[in-house]
Structures are given as C-alpha cells and as structure tokens.
Image (cartoon, rainbow, N blue to C red; front, side):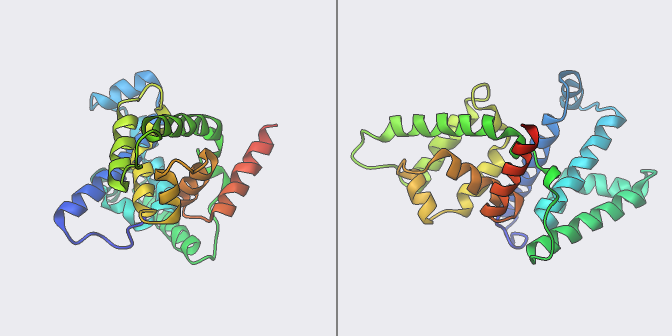
Length: 232
C-alpha cells in the first residue's frame, strides 16, 4: 500500500480503511476451516478465532506498519488488549515490536522473516490465475482499435475478479491488495505494458508480491526461490 500518511479527506480515509480491513479479513478467512468461517460470518466467533485474528494483526503490522492501525477492527482489538484481554500487555508489546520491524525494513536496516509469507507457498496457484486473467484480457481487447485506458482496464479487472470468486479465488481474496498495487504503479511503464497486454504473468506476480511485502523484487524472488527449494 503506497499511502505515505493518513488521508486528510474523510472519504479517502474511509476508502483506505476499507482497503486495509479487506486485506486483513481476506488473510483471516484463509486461515479458517469451513465451520469456523460460518461462525465468523455469523458474528459469533469463539475466543480461539479472535486470538487467530490477533495474530493476523501482528503479522500484517510488519508489512503495513502504521496503516494497520487505521482499520476499525484493529482499533477495536487494540482497545480490548489495553482494557480487558488478559495477555493484552504482551500483545501490545508485540505490536510495538512489529511496527519497529516495519520501520527498520523501510530504512533498510532489517528484512522481513522468510516464513512470514503466504505468497511463495501460493505461487503456482497465483500464476495460474494471473495467466488466466491476462489471457482473458487480451482476448477481450486485442481486436479493438485501441487498448483500454488505465481507468477502463482497472474497471475490467475489478469486474472480472469480483465476479469470478470460484475460478480466481487467490485474486478475489486479495483483490484489495491487487488493486492497491495497480494504483501504486499508475502511469508507470509497467502499467502501460499491463494495459497493452504485454506483461508476463510472473512479472506481474513478482512486482505485486514485492510491493505487498515492502521489499525489493530481487528480495521477493529470492524469498520465493528459497521456500520453493525447501519443498523439493
């Protein structure tokens, strides 16, 4: 997420808060079994699920830094840590440590732990979906006199991803992050190649993953390679 400071506009702040919360909820849902997911969506999660969400908050604080604190569910939980959760002091200390790590990573004084990322473990699935999405995009527009504008292309990607939850599950769950990346690269050479149907799936995956993890593409590729080699 490329926002460098909290939005001043109330509307922009609301939109950004929604994007952060969507990211957290998507990651949380991935951790749940079907039965637990039903309890979560019914608004009656057992304590164990709430604790699992705490871990998502702490892990994402390493990636998003201060941005994670803009999410209302996060604000709610942090308030509970301070008032009613028995191990609240420990959770608050861990949150501080996570934010400190984020800052050190940004300043080039530390690197995120390799094992923190779902991305490398889902590279095969992600690439298959990205390839399918880009293939559909090129098939849709290759015969036209001109490629879509950036705004039109993003709208097409959003419509396709949001209406393909079964076939594009990885992208659908991470759509907040994906469209955050598209906003980040707006007007760049990468965006132009994407919207003209020239970008390779692996290039889009690496760029998006590196942006999401707040690390360089080279570091992200190394991370993917190292975890992939451990599985062989």
